[in-house]
Every structure is written in C-alpha cells, then in structure tokens.
Length: 67
Length: 474
Image 1 (cartoon, rainbow over the protein chains, first blue to last red):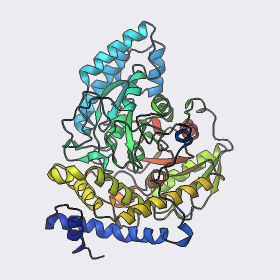
Image 2: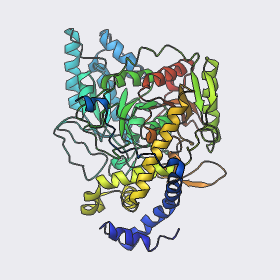
Image 3: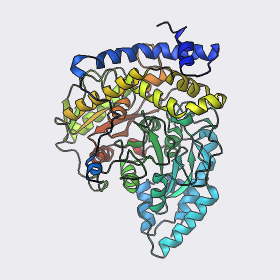
Image 4: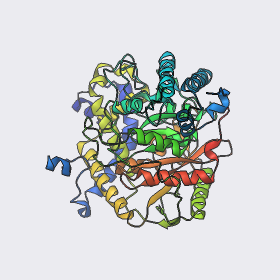
C-alpha cells in the first residue's frame, strides 16, 4: 500500500503537524495496518453481519430502566 | 512474633503471609522491612519501581502491627506489602503513568482500586514502572528506564505492566496491581512466570486509573499463585458508581472453590488458531498443561470460532483510535515529551477512519457472540498467553517460526486480543520454561463474570505443578 501522499493529507485533515520525518515513520505503520483494517471492514460489511451493532452503544441495563 | 530470615519470608506466597499475620505469627513490620530491603537490592537491576514508599510503608506497617496486636483486623490483606502500577492514582503521591507528561502529577484522590486495597489492609511499598501510558507491550520506558526480566536481565518483561510482573517474580512485593487493555496484565505475567487476571470488562472499577482505551481497559491482580490473585481480587472487585462502565453484578467468594478440582469441566480449544503459529517450547508447555488438566479429570473439546481471524487488526484499530482521542491535546502541545514509539502509535491512531473503528467495534460484537455460543459447549477455553518467550530488551521484532521476523506489537497480541475484544475474563498461569530458563504461560478464558472458575482451574493446575514455586536468581 502506497501511503506516501496519504499521511500528510490525513494529518492535515486531523489538524496534526507532522514533518516529513514523522510522516515517514507513521506511514510505515499505516501501510502495515490499513490492509488488515480494510479486510476487516469488508468482512463486517457482508450481508450476514448487517444487523450487528458496534460494541460502543448504550446497553440500557435493567438498573437504569428501574431507576 | 518470632523473627524470620528475609529470603524465607520473601518466598512465602501472599496468602501465606496474610494468614501468618492474622494469626499474629508474622509481623507486618518485619515483612515490610524484608520487602523494602529486597526492593533496594533488585531495583537497580530491574528498574521495576518508579517510586518506593520507604517511610510511608514503614509507618503503615507499624500501624498495622499495632492494630493487629490490639485485635483490630482491617481485612484480608492486613499488613501485606503490595505495589501499584504507576497509572493507578494514589492521593498526594506522584502518579506518572510511566510518562514525562504526568511526571509531577499528584492526584487529589485515590483510584477506587487503591482505596479498596487500603481498606483491606494492604501496605503499599511503591509504584511500578510500565510502558509509557500503557501503550505498548515491552515496558522499554524512555523516561524511567527499561524494565528488565528477573529471569534474565538482558530480556524484556513484556508489558505494559512490566514493572508489576518483574517485581512480583523477583520477590520485591507479594502482589501487584496491573492494568490490561490488550494483554498488559497477562503478557508480563506469562513472561515473568507469575499469575495474573484480566477481569471481565466492568468487573473492576477503572475510576482513577489513567485510561488507555476506554472500551477495553481493565485492572487486576498479579501475584505468584492463583490463590494470591483470588485473595487480592476479592478485596477490590465489584460495582463502583464512580465508574460509568462498572457492572452492577454480584461478586463471589473467590477463595471458596479453589480446592474443587477440574473433574468434569469442559476445556475448549479453538482449532486452527489456539495452537498454531507459536514457538515450539511454548507449544510443548501449553500442550502438556492441557494434558495435566485432562489427567485430573477435565475434558478437552474442540470448538471452532469461525471469525476469530481478524481479531488482531480489530485490536490494533481500537487500541489506536481510543488513546489517540484521549491524548489529542497533549500530542499537539507536547509531542516531544512522548517516547518515540508511543508518539508514533498516537499519530497513526489519528490516521484511521471512523469506519475502520466502528467496523472493528462491530467485529467485537460478532466475536463475543461466537464465544458466548461456544460457552454452551465448554466451561472455559485454554490457549498460550503469547506465542514466544522473552525477547532481548529493546527488540521491536520477534521470530516465532521459520526464521521470519514479525512486528512485536501484532505478534504479542495473538492470543490476548481475544478476551480484550470480547470483554471476557482471562487468567495467565505459569506452565513451563524454555531451554534458556525463560517462563511460559497459558491463558484460561472464562464466561462473563465467572472469574471463580478460572481461579478454580488455575489453582487445580498449580496444585499439580511447581512452576509457580521457582524463583529467578536476580
């Protein structure tokens, strides 16, 4: 994965100052991680998983409902 | 109270020390003094402690002794020397989280886990070194020194609770508190040859603990025996209204079933994952542990988890995005105050897309559902804690098989990521040594809030083996 131009653009989008040296270091990590993250996104986009909620939603425990 | 020699004292388990103190056969002053002497001897070699509470520990020990002699029993940890990872707040005492950024932070109040341990009678002997802000698995800390493994000081202690693991193994405290997001209790427990519990998410309050990744952070006990961990855990587990993620679920007597054995228990293994891609000595030791438990009456059952592959990516995504959110201001105002590795990880966490993060969080639901379904067929799962033994201090790559170098961070979470993502409890238990004398650990994974079964199985295993009784020669 070529992230050469990607890292400065993402840093700009995040309002994060990254010089060329930092961008190179971050780019190496990002290049290693993004393919697997995209693969996981493809898996989770499959029809069979369409109804799954993320693990970050409010669960409304019975204690909350009961007050 | 009769005087004892220090090495003999320090080889006692936490539970043994607690029992002797309560029977007035051991003085809290004596055991605290022995511990402080040991810290003084080993800490220059291990860098396990950031702060040692010499005078305070002595004062508390003296008060503990007077209370005990007056018939006043504070609780199950009365007079027992314990240490805390340095991301756990201690009122008025420096809590650095292993960072330069918090080097001078004096919390205004205790973390809930700190106050509960105080109430149980613990004597705090110090604050333990760790991977900076808990974001990493080596404890190679640029600000307070690289923590070293007491079994071989050229090797790493894993992390992020590396100081906790090294100090307990080196007999520099009888128990320690660690925190675990992606494996930070279990990894240093395995690598240092001790036991350590990552509780069910929400079982132990995170109030007053410097966060790493909110949706996966936990805190738990690390000690030489499973009984010690159970004893400590009972002192601080349970609901805390101050932590919004705390679960209001009843706790148990975690010591009650330690002697029940494993007869009839069903131990699950995940084919194609749990015993694949690991160093041969680790494979041999964990396989032997499984056979030991089988010999004691447990049944081994293969249970496929169809979507277990992908867990490392999900772990990396969540464990990057959440810390990068917490650290967003400091990363812009004080980037040079982070160590190089943590700074890079925080920066890359800002590069991931919201969709990556949310798909990873949806994957957690998928993986958790599969494990909950699998728990209809088994009582617990067993696998290695990590696929390799201790690497040299400073290493960022590891060779697991076929001479291929792999990135340390991804490799180290091969097995610990599963409980972290699913919120399930997991116990690391020492189960062997490699040819170089470096410890190996297995991981037991349980049903939600069923830490008691993990303690039961771990204790049964330790009753049949002696790995936990061996001491490093540091």
